[in-house]
Image (cartoon, rainbow, N blue to C red):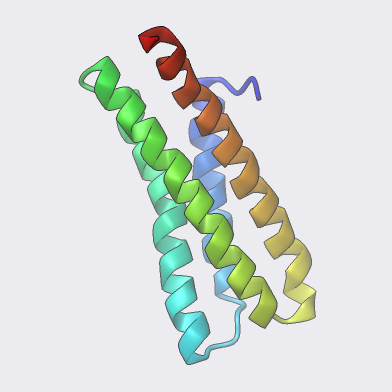
Amino acid sequence: MADSPENLAERTYRFARDVRRIVNLMPSSTATREDIKQVVRSSGSVAANYLEAQEGLSRNDFFYRIKVCRKEARESQLWLKLLAEDSDPSTRPEIAHLMDEANQLTRIFASIAHKQDDSDA
């Protein structure tokens, strides 16, 4: 979990990009359309909020954005899990990879957020 800020920015970008690529391969139904909208939003929000954190106006703003990143990465896991259940078997390995990446990002952001809790104690 020793990603530098530049590597983490690229990693969150790739996560959002890869989510967009895989959802374009998903079958269209009422449920999947809504789940796709949600996962596109949440995965993009991880990347966008991390960029905002890097430009944080204050220490509190930085940690607030990091916590939003954690929340959005966790939310992405849910939408990906739901999509995996309705996906074509050929896309499931890629969705599983994205779920793992969302889990890793959640853990990274939780670790960063925990540093604030430690320093505030």
